[in-house]
Length: 130
Image (cartoon, rainbow, N blue to C red; front, side, top):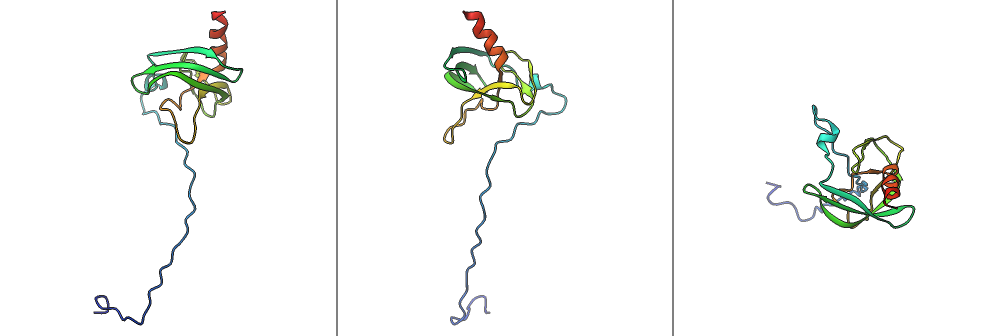
């Protein structure tokens, strides 16, 4: 009966606990068993370097039915955090290799943000155009 009609002289204290927020980092997609990494993450339909903007940035054209179309996407030089494959040449990338990856911001993360391009492949491609 006390549940339906609690006494008015008993006050209920509400206790709130502050829970710290966790930082969110998007995890790399796992490759299903029996598939090769190059089959699971195939090269895009069209990709090429449009322009070297500086020593550390370049403009890429990217068109793929899975990840979308980017006509002037900015890619920045960095180091590979994990092993993977080059989206431009299909060559394997080892952790620590110099790579280019799409530029991200807090407000915008491109759908191809987990893809990488070897810096050595880019320098060879740009060197051929001269």
